[in-house]
Length: 258
Ligand code: PGA
Image (cartoon, rainbow, N blue to C red):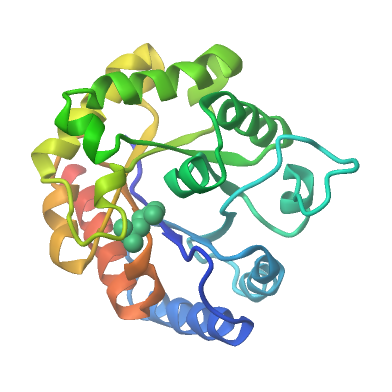
């Protein structure tokens, strides 16, 4: 059975003090109550190492570290870039690839996203591949086509390895940071489609939903068969709110295994 996974995407928010305080409070909350879900925290680059060190002293915590982006290159004259081996070296296990903000604001094409995905896997990081349609694409009935093209670019480069060590996040662009969540049915339809597109591997891979996930809507989203967890932006900056989302994801797993 696929385990539940909740990923915090802090984007470009916080300070070192915030990151450390959040981590300490969150780990203490987990000590009081195990949530039964895997959790990944993706802070801005400079806070990866301090958080990784904080977690290292807490063996047995279900929390891992992820980065929000990486270079497709391994090393060299690429000013300002950070490579997969560097992220691993700083304690990251996961990395977000192809977030819609990177695609839209930094012109990351499907091909570049695919290269980053492969660079992550080659180094042993688990890529969290984000896919999703814009509002215009949804209104034009192009949701599934858009997602299929985004997936295909990665499948072409990564081949059958795609699903072995990877996570997919379906994030409709119109739902990100807008307070408008996809309905559970809208999300489920795309999640099911993604699984089918991936063939045999599709049944194993964790597929997260992202876009204005909060305590109030998490449970209904996680009740859908093909939604294995969430990629959470805004609501991941508040410990209690984020903890509640993690708990809702864990509940899904425990009810599914009864
Ligand atoms: P949001 O962001 O939860 O604030 O909508 C999600 C994301 O961008 O990954």
